Length: 378
Image 1 (cartoon, rainbow, N blue to C red):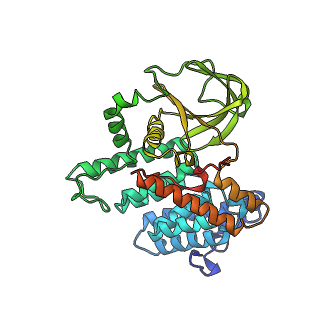
Image 2 (spheres, one colour):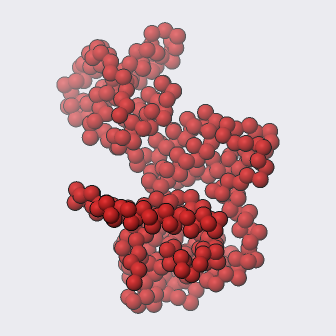
Image 3 (tube, rainbow, N blue to C red):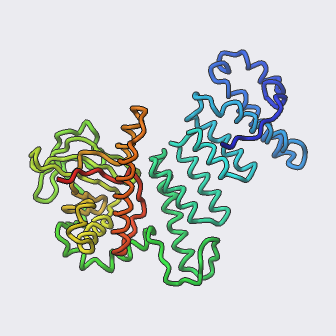
């Protein structure tokens, strides 16, 4: 485990700052002991900006390191964005944000703040590694880091930059090869959009594909559904779906359990995405076409998709047993390890699924326990 370098206690602002010494016993500093440090770091930073070539730089760096050492294991600041900013300052100071990111991962500090992933992505961008920047943004989105909208905008920005870097011969970006003109980024929005446009006439013929150029105008707002929306009826086409609760929430979509025509024996999952995302339905139909009937049950099935100008609703099979990650967590909650034979079984199944996909020219792109549903074959 890596830590900031330990420094002599004389670097503490409580020892060196008269103002901080006076605050040491104040009620506010007792309730929030990092506050005097933050003020001393701010003052040291101002001194450093006024005299960047003097001793102020060393004092500033030492103060930041000592602050991190003092509060790295303090639960009160585990999700405090002020503390996260100090870590980011430290990463910028030592020019090794990878080390800082690893420390924050190990200690579980501020993993739900989008600022962490934005800063790390910008660090990679500055180094010219746009693919790594894209991956960091994607990681933050998968963890639903807040504010999510800002992280989505940055993610889309990197996707656009990546695509332009591949198509513009004047752009020379580390990690990309201009000697491969046929190389495409499968995760690029423009790549997906262009392919869907080319395939539009074929996709329209797919069973279960319904598209409207208008915004969704149903009586029940699909973007504001919550667990409190149980039993509300959502009408899509000629079908009515009774919402029974939220069964999944990710950075890109919400998934709801629903009864078709209020029939508890006819259960489906409604996956709502905004903006509309027809690509997933297209891939489901590719699975139908490319994978044999014997192997097809290993993968999810989409009954239909309703595409609107503002969102899309994918109607899929509902599996009530949760994800592989849920199965792993159920053992962790009981402080038990999953049986070795069960681990071997799941591993074999995962490798088998990947082998099937790759054999028909399909890459999953986000293959992880949280995205794998458990099924019980009968």
